[in-house]
Length: 351
Image (cartoon, rainbow, N blue to C red; front, side, top):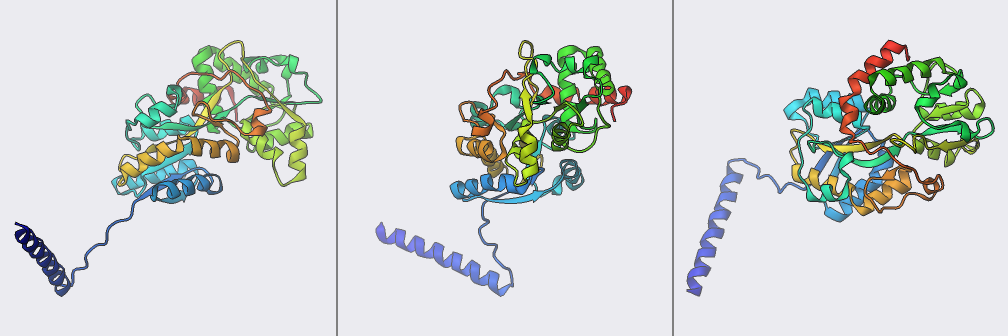
């Protein structure tokens, strides 16, 4: 019996060797075993997310190939490439953009017990096509020397006449503002949300221009007294290599609005597996890693965002701002109300 097994193994080896020889004679190159990899289209800067991908590669042996670009340009690229896209994962900012990717048919559903356990349901698309991976808050920022925080209360109150020509905020084509208004449409109703937007326009200290950091610099410079901005931009100023930015950050404080009602508007950066992913298993594994303790800690410490996974501590600088009640609506609503938000901005003349 033993001799029979040896002869059988010899015959299989000889047949395999003959196959290699015939392929070589025929000039056919045998493909080497394919290394595990995952291809990511990312709207986040490489310097911010590469440490996370390095940690994933070290843990799994799966290579992460990264293509960085502007969020809208990456969505258009995915549309154009269609079934031929090399992308397995789309990583982008704001639930509104993630909803656009879903609505365009660029993402596929993912059922993962790990993602379900690590990410609260309100930060996950209802159809599980995208998952929030880091949390950002968009509160009110004010000048320490010119604004008594007792004057502040809610987002809605900023539309009052006492704030005439005192507010700086980005343009209406900014997705962060579109998502804020989308949330207010949900909480206040379309009519009150439009009244808020109209009052905000009347209270602009200047025509909307630049990004969130530009609004904060304007507050520090005295061009306006109040701004609405994502918290991590204040952290970036506070930790900047430029002394002028650090000085500007020191002049600004955070007010957490709507603590007696629905809470501070929050959003996510997040990701989904692309519809035509060629490396789907590796893509899901990457998302699961990004929702795990190590990646969530790196998000918090390097990007100054809030972890989506409960129990992971925030950075010391962020912790110093204190705790707050966050809006707990499902962020799918931000995408569902986006078109109405854009129409309201147009009607009220928000540039």
